[in-house]
Amino acid sequence: MRAVINKMSLKFESHSVNEAFARQAVGAFVAQLDPTMEELGDIKTVVSEAVTNAIVHGYANKCGFITVTVRLFEGRALELKVKDAGCGIENVEQARQPMFTTGDDTRSGMGFTIMETFTDKMRVRSTPGKGTLVAMVKVLKERRA
Image (cartoon, rainbow, N blue to C red; front, side):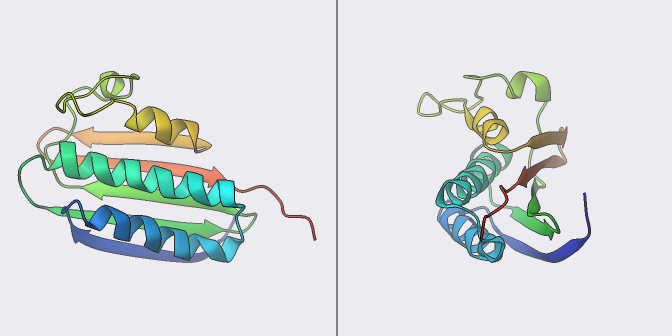
């Protein structure tokens, strides 16, 4: 990637009401790249999915902290990281399969699939008992003057 032009980091407790805060804060920060409405929607969606996964699966029935970091790069690219110190994922490959969930029957199991679909690159690192890091890259289309 090219040079970083701006970056930010948010740290908040894993309360479900904070998902909307993270979504809006990242959307407002990324707005400086002048994304299309579709691109902005994609970014907000992946933030929502990653933060919700951390809240529902990472921390389950306890509270912990989630950190969201965004770096903006020259060339209209951004890197988004969502990190928790929750229970971690036993089998990352299995968790990335569509329809797989460790949650109850209200969960679709599509979180990682959605994140991967709406970004250009996604990686997941997790250690059971220590937490999970989801890192995504999205390159925005060039805007014509």
